[in-house]
Length: 229
Length: 221
Image (tube, rainbow over the protein chains, first blue to last red):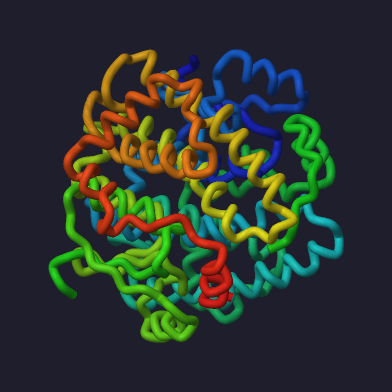
């Protein structure tokens, strides 16, 4: 196992993207092995690398970690992005839970039929603007600080920026009613590690396309239809 | 806010049940406010108690915590059920997230329309028997200890017991191929706080009955 964390996933966002964001935000270099064939996946399975037969899997510090939340929590704690005490952790966990739910609606998007995509786009925007963004807008407004929790950069900030950018890809002016979030977006985007991640050539993955969908379906033999919310 | 944690949910398992188990295992007394109709949920939403307008919500230590994982993480840490260091936490998190996935499958079953139930049942039993239980059987076999992580009781043990009992409700002999899980079940069930929770009259909730499904759905939709 190399010294750098190694990510095993498809060459696309999916559930691994939040992990890429967090490692990048922490300034941690990482390697990636992209699953392209069924054979590769079966080899991983047979080798016993995937605890629950699933990816994401990240080799880090001598462990083969699976389960996205477990991996993210480990990275956040290791790189000091998880608050300074139990109460800050509770806030971070709550905020990340919200952005995770929001990004979950977008996760399935590429797998939907064209008709369902339109419905889902509207659903995503509606949830973002009525349930999630108002919460973070208010948090920032109420304490007037630069970061969501404890006046310190944390996992919650990284995750929120990721979510904002993903929703903007569905509706570019979605932040128009949220001045605090607009300032937050500008501010967090200019943090050097994040700025670097946002530049072309980084390990950030693009909006999923048909090729990504085909790859996932082929590798996982996941041919059933995915329903919209 | 009283000294005891207060749980806000409907009178059933759903996503709150793992939290009831954790508190009970930790020997923490808690109170519950049940949502019985939509207006109960609306009231909580309007008074700003629900960060994302959703339950579960738990009032604890001056906070109104939402998001199942946030709540469970807080309780597990506070009551020392989260391992002794980051590596133990990583293992616990991995195991518990797997159990969370299985719990979602088991929980969903009661709410599905009849025509979807048969296939879902086959899938959830397959996942329990071929994806999740073999992992925990192997963990116990490999280290030969009484608890899943770090040789002491953690949330992983509590939640594994919960999941085993839930799976057994659907298939009583589901542990037939898993001797270590059978002895694990007996051992963890005997821990005094857990034994108490397993007795009639505790705050443990029963499996949702078909006749109650419509009522629960009407609260949320």
